Length: 236
Image (cartoon, rainbow, N blue to C red):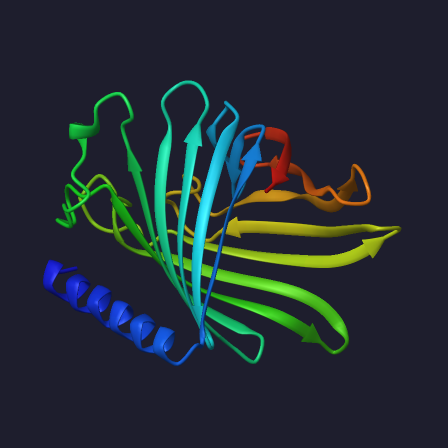
């Protein structure tokens, strides 16, 4: 992807958000989560506790989110940008994932978009969050389309991930069963495989009449790598 195209996209988003602010339609939200370790789609990126700040601008059906994940020990840092459009239960996303070296910030160049050397990873995804014949189901399909997802011939792997998630309630807990996998060799596995099976729990822990915290517990099983994780998260 050319820098000029990215610059035009960035300027377009800024102009749109500025116009929305004048019309009093722009919403903003920010916060952070703390996780006991960082696991994503069945893959472990950091075995140390991670602090994950975020900020989101929302305009109608559009949203622009900045997300970070920083390990409290060892060396892991991730900075992502997500552009999303939602309508009628569908959400279309363009995601930019980026990692840096906290011990040597000059090791990677955030402005490097050369496909062979960039540390950016662009993903296009679609999420359906609705009801199929009165059966609640969240379906995700995503493909890495550009950047640091190359094979030994320096060609894009186009690593693709599919996931189905079933949300339900039990007592005062919000639970979700999920299963995800990849259809090709690439980022997630060295072959087509199921890489992410588990259960997610969300619960509001009340400390007093005036203070409570959302707490998440997630169980991940990666059958392909024969790995298992139990992760605790707290939102602020």
